Length: 139
Image (cartoon, rainbow, N blue to C red; front, side):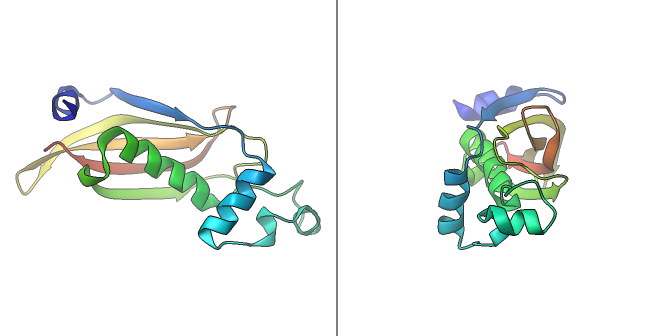
C-alpha cells in the first residue's frame, strides 16, 4: 500500500505533518538521559541565564530526531537513503515543534526511483529551527 502512495506523489505534494507537544523541562531531562547529552544549557536555568539566555532550551539533536521520526514514520526506515539537516535556530522551552515536508524532486540513482523531501522542524510561530532533506526510495 505504501509503495502506491509514494509512487503517486509529485513535486510540491506535502507529506503528513508531525505535531509534537510543547517542550517542557521534563522533555529536556528525558532527552538528556536518553542521549547522554547533559550540557547545562539544556537543563540548568541558572547556567543558561549566566550564559545570556532567557532559560534552558532544547537540544538541537532533539529536533533533528523529530525530523527523523517524521520521515521514518511516514515512509519507513528501510526506504531512507539519506538525511541532511541544518540547524537554523533554537527551539525554546514551551515551543511546540511542528515537522513538515514536501516533495521537491523525483529522481533515480542506479535505477532506483526516489523522492527528495524538503523538510523543517518549526515552532508554533512557523519559525524554522532545523531544515533539511531526505532521499526516499520508492521501491
